[in-house]
Image (cartoon, rainbow, N blue to C red):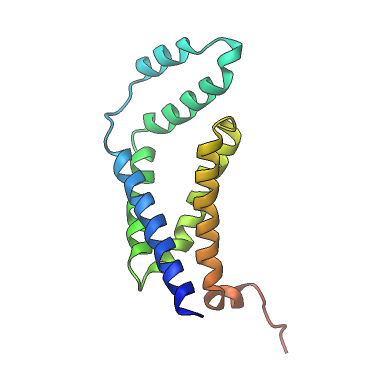
Length: 150
């Protein structure tokens, strides 16, 4: 692989890893939300024309109210982002981040389709993640193509 391609993949790894670390830190910045706060916020958007906004509020608030899942998500973003940035563990980090970047992209596709900028951004992050995993296909392709028993 050419030197410029290798440098490009290093930049992509650092970008995606940094983005995930930033997102993980943000999960710990806001205080826990109470059910009363969720109801008050949801009631503001209870009219039919605000249904997409209500869906987003209820989804994110539900994840935050579990008392653990929002923090687990943040911890995983931090851990996998750091794994991605470190040269030796970059493949493992990109592999573990793949379902997370897919979920982030699908969240924006189905619940914020009107936010084109965020859709492009999250789609780009998912595409970068796919490219990082495909770059290392020699490490995992044997898991997909099994030789028949002899």
